[in-house]
Image (cartoon, rainbow, N blue to C red; front, top):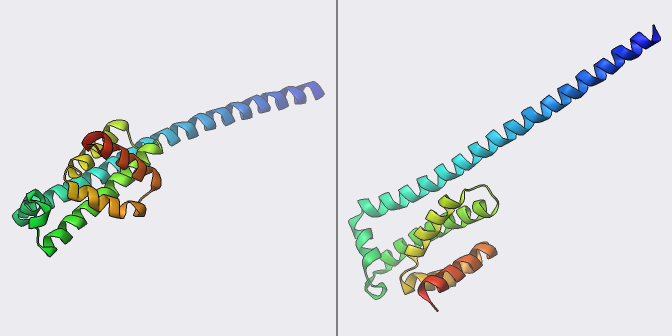
Length: 155
């Protein structure tokens, strides 16, 4: 009788251990799926921001002209518009940088965002705006952008 009870207890332990292992595999699988969903949500958010900025520029001819004009020819209101676009673009790039650095954004999406911000930084005036405001951003992102500007445009 005692050996039958011991055998049943051993079987119960094996079944319990198997259930724990199965639960761990299930939790691991769910975490993986959640990670994929989080990455996709991050990509959607970055894409949405980029589309909003592009749409604002494309649908407002005066804004597009201001972006193309030399800085010294801009009115005060145009300077404000450009600063706002730059701020939104920089915040989006900073967010993408942080997500990428944290492993929550794929490299190809980060590289696209990095290229977009560097296109904005082509003008010396925009680079100067960045230098004036860089301390308001994540220090790692600021170091990255400083180096990327230097590598691309010199100085």
